Length: 145
Image (cartoon, rainbow, N blue to C red; front, top):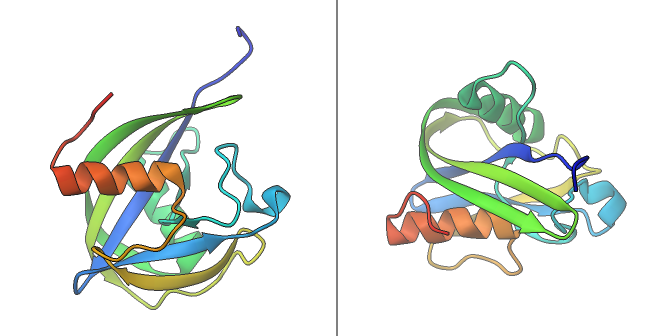
């Protein structure tokens, strides 16, 4: 147990006209690049925090790397504690309602497509850290155990 590390990551809920941007993770678990069992699931843009970055810098970098979308402003809306066997991440959820550019598949080995979905008609299955961000957002809570 002593050699295990906790990862820090983030998910960015990009909203435009009541629709949210989600990407479909690669079906191949090796390519989906997730310790949290994300293969084939829909996820918001996001990733892992790099050493020395602020949360905002990391989130903006990941959104740009994955989608080509420029985040102009965003705010932290939720914090989740995501644990599965063998992996543990603390995920910061951001809400971005001010962005520019169209979503492009820039990392096809990880995300195979980006689509906009109505907040009340989300696809299934959703990557569980993203799902928790949505749940907290809809319930208006910052953190729940």
